[in-house]
Image (cartoon, rainbow over the protein chains, first blue to last red):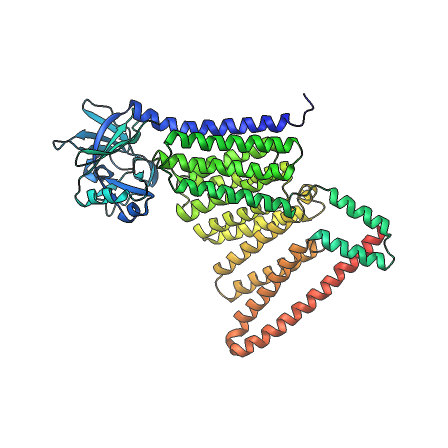
Length: 193
Length: 370
């Protein structure tokens, strides 16, 4: 070992900085890989809470596929309260948007012409006496940060209900936003990096 | 501060001829060479680092669109590298305070980087996950640099995780199980405190343990939980304070804290038991137990441990007032209650003065023997 007092802290600095850089890189790359390898689905969406739009931080987007009617759930509901994740089969509808064909608490098998999305984990609490009419699912694409002052456009589009999101779904069912469009015209297109 | 007080005492002893000025000077000089983690200058430097990191975090929140995304990522990663390398340079050359401040700045910047990247790439991640990663990074850095300042930061991040779980996530027993990570965080922080010699940060860990156990009781308000808290606190207190105990020396290394916080846990358990009791018999039983615990605590650990002593006094006084209110309050009415309260406080004061005198005379005798 060298007696230079700089060696140990320098080694520590490089170790720590490499680990932290690696994690940040992993965050960026795990999203980019979904965008690179995923399949496009076009989703009908509405931003909830329009105040967020004007505040210029982020929009919470709510999708038609965020609400899953209970009769679309195949394979039954868990009997006990549990941590659950939904497997959701999306299929293209006649109007061009993708909708929920079926959903399951277990994993769904892939099928031609459909895409399987995985919801974020949530806590499922069964209420046998008064079954829920629908389930809420998050897909990790509910948040979109908009530059300050640009929220107006999105808000007007929301009022005209003309907002759509093109998302990419990878083989594991993870989703990322690729494009936000108003009346079919792209408004924000997301680069890989 | 301790430095000022001890100098004043030295001057008084010198003027009384009890201490030779040369020795006093040598003692003060020895004290000044000691490495203290929390000198005023260091604290200010770390505060400056915190302010700078807050500026970086705010820059992130402003979502600066003028710069392309990859440049922003490169910039913040560059800042992390620059801060850590600068910290290493300072530490290697013996600028300890500056080094500690830079380490805090670097680790705070990493937290900002997680937020910035989450925002730029629209990742709807979970705040708890982000905090856990940040905590892990801070722990690794604290070990790698053996940095007390980072151990303190880890203590605060552990609190942030607990706060996020309890306040924002409204966590419960059946939830995703993250709440059970909190004891592990506490153990990690205490280990870091011991490894990095971060003294004061251990209070963050102990307070978090108390808060977590308190949360446990609030989630599950049952008699057995309250009894368990009381029992565990009492056992831990005895283990930490009775010289025969195998843990006595180990606990002693950590100063007054283990005995005080285990005593506080026992008191917390008793307070919870007070809300569970039903009927006069139980009320009196729990009241008597509380008084006994307060006096027992003072008797066992009070002489060496001022914090336990004062908590003991406070518990004893509160319990006596509470009991007199419950048993006599309704008979005597409000003014009568104040009368009783006055008498009780006077009695407690008398007791405290007697005990304090006894402790100081005992200390004097032992001091002369040693």
